[in-house]
Image (cartoon, rainbow, N blue to C red; front, side, top):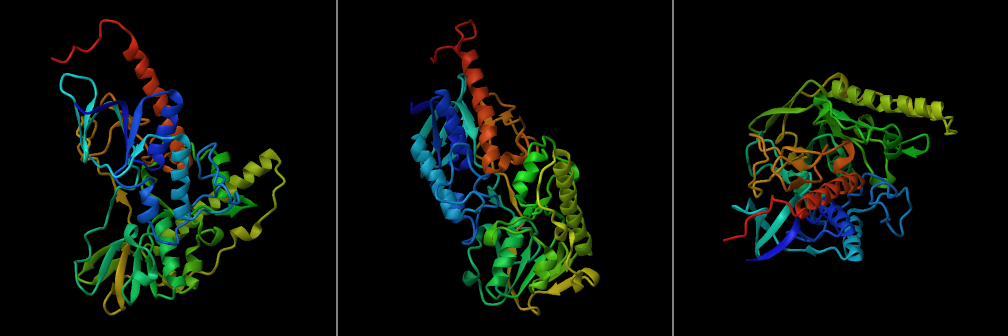
Length: 422
C-alpha cells in the first residue's frame, strides 16, 4: 500500500520549508521530500563567493532572523543554507532528504495521487510542487562544442581558479552575470561581458536599501507583469557589502562590454548593436526608481539625506560609441564561456492535467487547474516577490489556507463521499 499523507511537498528548499511551516501551524499531516539536502541549491549550485542579494533584515522568513548578522549585511550562501536547515530543525519539519520523486500520477477511481519515489510509492491527497524557480539551466545552442572552448552555465561556476587558463566571456547581464564577471576580473582574468536588456535598481538610495524602496513603493506586490519586461533580468549585487551595478564602472575596471549575443559562426561570435541602448534603458529604470523614491520621501515628509551624486553617470566606455560586433574567441584568447542565461522549468515528473502545450503550469496564485495540485516558488506566482525568500512565505500561507478550506469541504459527511476501494 505504501505510506499516505494529506499533503506531499516536493522540494526541500525555501519554498518547501515555507509550505511545511504553514501546514504545521494548521495541523495538516504532510511530508517534505528532498532529493538531496535541505537548501541544496544554495550549497552546491552557486558560485563560491555568492551572497544573498537582499539584506538580512529583508531576505528571511518572518520570525526567523539571521542570528549573529547585522540587519544590513548580505549573508553568504552557505550560511543561507544553514539558516534553512536550522529553521527546519526548530520546527521539527517532516523533511526526508536523499529521496527523489520520479513520477506523480492521479490515483484511478480514488482521490489523490500516487507519488513514486526512489524509496517506494507514497499516496497523497494533495501535492505541492515546490521545486523552485531554478530547475534546468539553459545554454543557448550557439557555439559548437570544441576542445578549445569550455562552456558552462552560471550554475556550474564556482571560482576563477577552477577555470582553464585564458580569458572568459560571460553572457548575461542579470545579477549572476554581472557578479560572476566582477568576480573573475577581481581574480585578474581578462573578461568580456555580453549585456542584454536589464533593469538595474539602486542598491541603496538616501540611506535605504532598494528592497525597502521597492516595498514602500508597492513594487514587490505588483500582481501583473508587463509582457515586454516579463523576462527582463535585474542587475543587482550584494557582493562586497552591496553596491549598485554600474556597467560603466565595470568597463572602467577593465571588463570589455559587448551587446547581446546573437549568433556564432564556429568560434566567431556576433553581437547585436544594442549595447548603448541596453545600458541607457537600464539607466532610465535606475533613474525612475530615484524619481519615485524622491516623490515618496517628499510626500511623506521623510528626513532622509539628499544624494545628488546618485544621478551622476560615469563617462561612456568606448564600446558604447563604437560597439564590438564580432569576436573570434580563439584569436581573443577566450577559453571559457559562462552562460548566465537563466533556467527553464522541468515538471516532467508531474503527470497531471495542468500544463499548457508548452509545458508551462496552469494555475491561479499557485492553485493548479488539476484539483489537489499546487505550485510554489515560481516567478510571479502571485506577485513580483513570489520567487524571493520572503515572498514565497506569503504565497505558502495562501496555499495552506486553500488546503485547509478544501479539507473542510472533504470532511463534510454528505452524499459526495468516495467509493470504498474494491
